[in-house]
Length: 121
Image 1 (cartoon, rainbow, N blue to C red):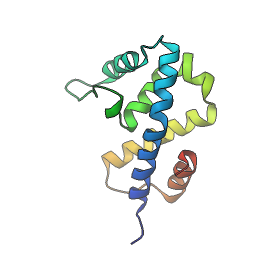
Image 2: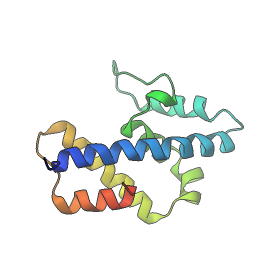
Image 3: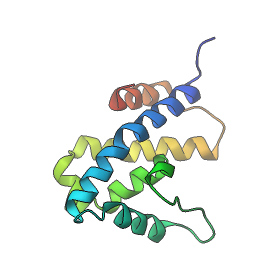
């Protein structure tokens, strides 16, 4: 049976988290003297809404966590490693993820194709 766009997007987001998590940890550790995970945790706690679950460590990070950490330290760290295109795709990833959580409709095919090409799944 063919996969729906929703399934394709879900798999692509999983690939994104699996691929970017080690990169984010490595970059955060380099910038914050080996305390990258603690700094990332601090960013997540600052952005968390009251009563919402905050992951206890990198093993629990989902798409929102990875994107949130990158955007929190964009100006001083990730801007130097990633380009404008990647910044734009992070915003699009965030939108697609949020749309999928809010509604049951699938993302349009063109967005799915761009997302999958960006992530490389």
